[in-house]
Amino acid sequence: MCLRKCEVRDMKKLTIKRTTRTDFITYLGVIIAFIVMTVLRDQGFLTRSLTGQLVPICCYISMAVSLNLTVGILGELSLGHAGFMSVGAFSGIIAAMSLQSIIPSTPLRLAVAMVVGALFAAIAGFIVGVPVLRLRGDYLAIVTLAFGEIIKDLINCLLVGYDSNGLHMALNLTGSKSITDLNLESDGIAIIKGAQGATGTTTISSFTAGFVLVMITLVIVLNLVRSRTGRAVMAIRDNRIAAESVGINVTKYKLIAFVTSAALAGAAGALYGLNFSSLQATKFNFNTSILILVFVVLGGLGNIWGSVIAATVLTILPEALRGFDDYRMLIYAIVLILVMLATNNAQAKALLGRIIPKRKGAQANG
Image (tube, rainbow, N blue to C red; front, top):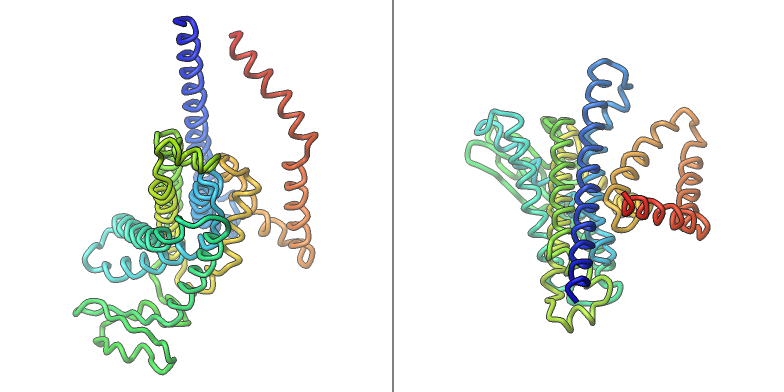
């Protein structure tokens, strides 16, 4: 009996060491990529197009990793992740533009805007998640899809301005109002102009801030997955009835994962929104949610490192193929199909299955 307990304890230690090593390799890979891209950018080796994509790539990586927490780790299909991104984007823009005189430091103002974006997205995730996460089946996908469309329509009706008296807001539901109805002072600024979106935004996003966001996202998600909460979430994913039978509060742990995912999407949205001087709500439509879901599926459900790679490659690929003009989207679609076939091919999985045990055996012998 004592020998058996020792073997179990040694196996647990080996598993912990293996997961810790994998996590640190993930962190190290992102750090090395950031250093290399920074050096290439500063030396002028990157094209103008690729340089402009650095911040969006970081945003998409954070979006993919956060959505993987819901889809891959929790096992629930969410089709409204772009809705949480839009909540973070526009709330972050409002915070950054209204705090220009109070917080003159650009990095600090960007950090505050990202925190505000994460907070409002978390509140939206809580409001959506409380009633929906008690349901089963595809209801979550349907409701999150509807949430994304509702948010887009609300922002199209939103008028926001700022002057010395503070924020001025109005909903243009009938289409009869304009920014002048906010009665801003002569030195006031119009932040959101209804269907025109946020125009005249001071762009303060940076690649460094994107790198910090990616690292924070990875730390939060990986530590959550390795924690007791993460094990409870994965138990719910594998067998909800069995999880309930051992006393796991299913709604509580599902809500933790869902709200965390929404908050990270909101922070990414704030960084994304402050990277452009003009941004419309139509940018965060159903197609954007599907794009993020594609990143997660191609990277592998529950595979955080795969989400990082898929988001990076599939963001760069359309621009890299721009020289092919009319054929670039066709080539992009073919690449997606080939990757899907490769990752779902039985022979490819069998090959990986033969390789991985050998590696484990070699580690055990060592």
